[in-house]
Length: 251
Image (cartoon, rainbow, N blue to C red; front, side, top):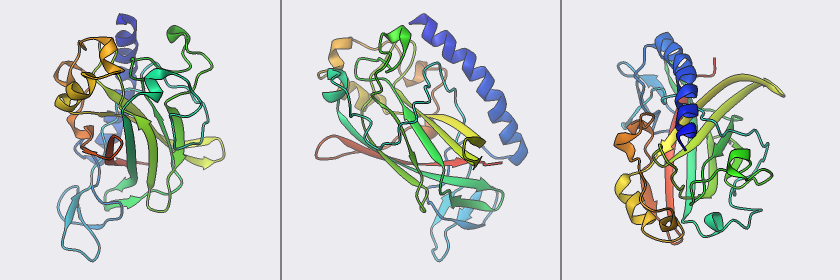
């Protein structure tokens, strides 16, 4: 478990350099992106006003956070990340519907980004990633997959509330890529999504999460955690649903 933390901290140092370079180029604050998918016009630094509306939306870059040691480019184009597995820590996990809106950040505002590839991966209710030799899960692909953003910049995933592992708070990894041609990556942005500790405590008090025992890292103790990408969840008939907008630069 200590090896996991060291690997993620090492990767964090690399991606942080890239993120700082991006932020220096635009002079923007590192907080979550627009709350509206299509915005135009500017009103002050990093703030935009929606077209044809008096409402305003913050339009800034989403923080770039470590990719971590468990990314696998599975090339699984699917919205349901819980399929093709008999893992009880997936099939019995609390359902989570996750909607993301990807917007392209520029100095003049944010616009919905169509055609971007959005990869998602995270641990199961037992804190274990699929397709990892160190986890004895090679060949399994649960809780991994990607979607392509539609004309509104949106993708939706059916997954579960993630479990925890030693040294990290509960999180979901997200990578957004654009391509200049098939197979040629034009831009790549990686971040992580986080959860409210109080809600996590409530969920982890029940099976299958409670088989892991008391977690040892909360949001305030995690040196990767960023409140800018903490999800606000709503309860649904089957579990929870969350939505977030991610602002990226494509150049």
